[in-house]
Image (cartoon, rainbow, N blue to C red; front, top):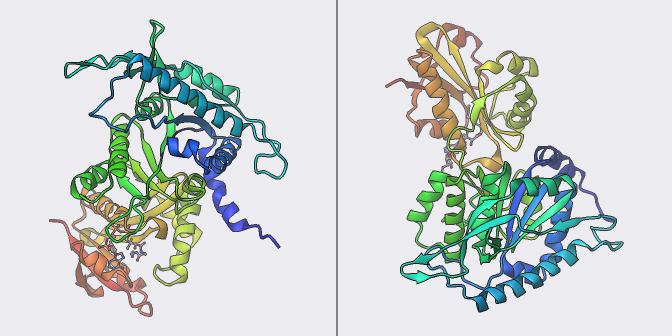
Length: 425
Ligand SMILES: CC(C)(COP(=O)(O)OP(=O)(O)OC[C@H]1O[C@@H](n2cnc3c(N)ncnc32)[C@H](O)[C@@H]1OP(=O)(O)O)[C@@H](O)C(=O)NCCC(=O)NCCS
């Protein structure tokens, strides 16, 4: 008997809610448009659309190699070739969006796609003495016209063609098109589907998250990255520098990568974000449920001490959280104790799917900074498992005698936590 995975469905619910009504711009490589995986992708896109995501799809022609520095001259013959190719790819995508057969995931769906002159272009002109002719650059995107299409429930299909006010047609780099569209409208995400393997670290683990800085660092440090991955990281960095907040790199080799990335904790690709370090924010009463879901498994394993709902609610002003797509993925608290100008750093936790991405380190630094700005001279932690983690971050082993008397009185000897202290420099 076929089983229905109710837990997966339930855990996707907050993501469905978080993404509803947001604009996602997605680039599709030509190999995917022409390949056998296209029907599966279209079905996933159709599902996303019915779950309330507004979609802009930018498909590539694959005629010219990707290159920022070596732009091709587009003479009238090449332009015609591009136009023919685009006609072919567009009709393939449109026909698959029209599938409504019984026994397919798209049964009963009525999806309409529109393409048009949404992207205005200007000629690239003469570069290094060479006239690039019909090679163009994005001049402006008619965001209102795109929004109007969303209002009618349409999916917007864009190609690498743009039009000038003089009535000419230009070939554009599809990544420029996607980035400019994403940057010029309040898009929640820009997603690059890549005909390439997922980005991994040197231990062959998928890199799930990179800040803009760490992406730049990775590019200069890792010499073994493939050309395609390198280019996509460059495109992502460029998009972040152009005010796009979140860029996802997804491999088309991973079945259902889009759905996994958008509707599961773990994801399937790499998120590169322009949000440097500002995603830590003070917790509010609405976060209590999220904090409890995060720490409950750790309490069950006795890694963290049990806290009641009421206790967290009463002390919520001491908590900070990191949120991703409506989920609390990390939390920590600073409880200032007036005696001895000392504070306790407590309840520091990062969801297992988001560990080793630096969230714990950033939260700890943030809580320490908060302590120093409140005039405290030192902070302490009580921990049973993360001794070395704190030691590596400048904490020294201490004893309960060094703690304020109030803390000594409530110390749980059975738990036998280790005391670690750090003083302000
Ligand atoms: C400790 C914790 C907050 C770290 O969060 P994080 O976001 O993964 O931390 P960072 O990304 O900043 O640092 C990751 C590094 O710390 C190391 N690390 C993680 N837990 C560790 C531990 N218990 N002891 C030693 N090192 C540890 C990781 O291996 C990684 O190092 P590596 O990249 O060299 O392998 C997280 O593991 C956690 O939530 N643990 C359970 C709760 C807990 O123990 N809290 C502390 C008590 S208040």
